[in-house]
Length: 191
Image (cartoon, rainbow, N blue to C red; front, side):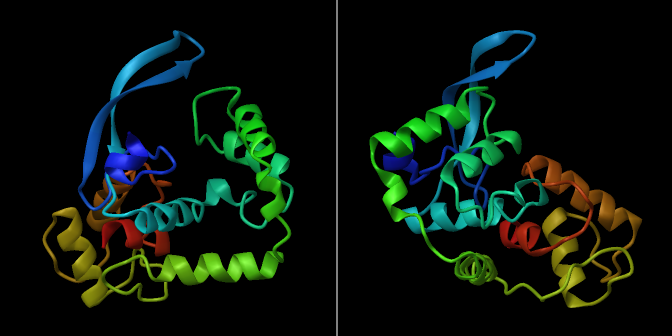
């Protein structure tokens, strides 16, 4: 249903450009075990946007070991270790799915080609083009004003502590790495 109705191929939670669908899902935590919850899942306009969003997600620092990994078993474990899913058996299930469907036959791309493609795709995600530099405390200008408008604070074009705090809150709400800076991933989700 998630893939057909919402074009969400990877079960990514949250909202995509403000669009989400509330669905029942199972979550696991060590204290309570498996439990059913209702959570927002990203709703995409098409499958292409879902794939691009996964690429953007994998740009987060916690997924560094996934990008460029050529061994699907190591990549699956890296995805699990990065916290993609709460299921402690996520990597094993993903590996089994790959093997049962002989998906490893698609492996073998050169690492540099994969990294270049990821960089190109990420740079095309945003409606407003990424300025090509991380914006953080001390940055100024129109791009800072755009950020301030996006996070709902007064837009004076100066990236100060208030802007950093508002960006951190935005990153938490969108399940991004929280650093108070606007790099390519935060920018792509924001715009």
